Image 1 (tube, rainbow, N blue to C red):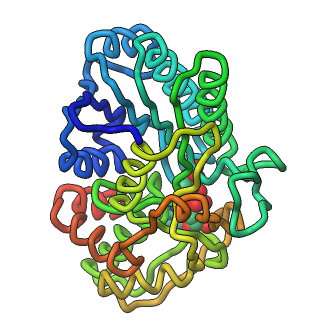
Image 2 (cartoon, rainbow, N blue to C red; image 1 turned 60 degrees about the vertical axis):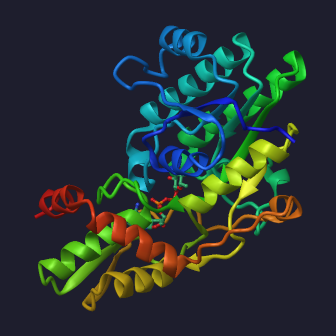
Length: 320
Ligand code: GFB
């Protein structure tokens, strides 16, 4: 067991979806929380990362900082998704080694697995086949991050571990209708359609892909659990083990938001990987399982979105 009590814990990416959930979750641990100031510390810079870690001297690090986005963002900004995520992973891992960080948790993603991996996807599927082209740049950077943790453990004895969260959603998400992931984008679209009394809502792709969605506060809880209880080079999936089609997700989002118009599918937009549901037995064997179901999670995400009217307004104005 690794005790967080009395430790300085740095959440890299504390303002993002996962990072902010980690900050909420870690508030109930008896540790000192550190957040690097965005204005002075660009984690793509090795000098700035190194000098922050040298001064802050964290005992433990969660690497939740990343360039992230939905299928369209991934597909259209390959250089940023590859470069930014490679640099963040390399800089944080190396600075952590140099300054004797006791434990580091690197966050990957389930898009690291082959496009046609066996379902539910076991951790052993890593590097067994070609990646999904819409997000291969992000996936390659995340695979490099995993391999850095494994290499630093092997060569330097660093206690660095990696977890692979499935598609996350919840408070603090990016509700941008073009750049965000499917859950926040659909919430924003359905909300706008209801408020503007539009007759229809356009959903990308065929509606047939299957995805697994994990509420972000559940993900943060699992990450803290692993930080305390897990120490191994093997990666660990973070998910619920259950899946829905995008069409089923759309129905649920429309119900939560109160939009009852027509749903149109734009098949000119990519579906991405056909199916992605994780095998969560490794995490379950460590005594952890998800608590928040999809309906409840969608309600909580929508409540957060409505409580942040500037975001709701921006989303409405953006495509108005
Ligand atoms: O969440 P999402 O963008 O990412 O899309 P991925 C999931 C599915 O929802 C795709 C469909 O089949 C989309 O075509 N979809 C329908 C929409 N309507 C929309 C919409 O309005 N917005 C969005 N974004 N999707 C991501 C990767 O893949 O998964 C990332 O690109 C990351 O790298 C993340 O790994 C977890 O699940 O396809």
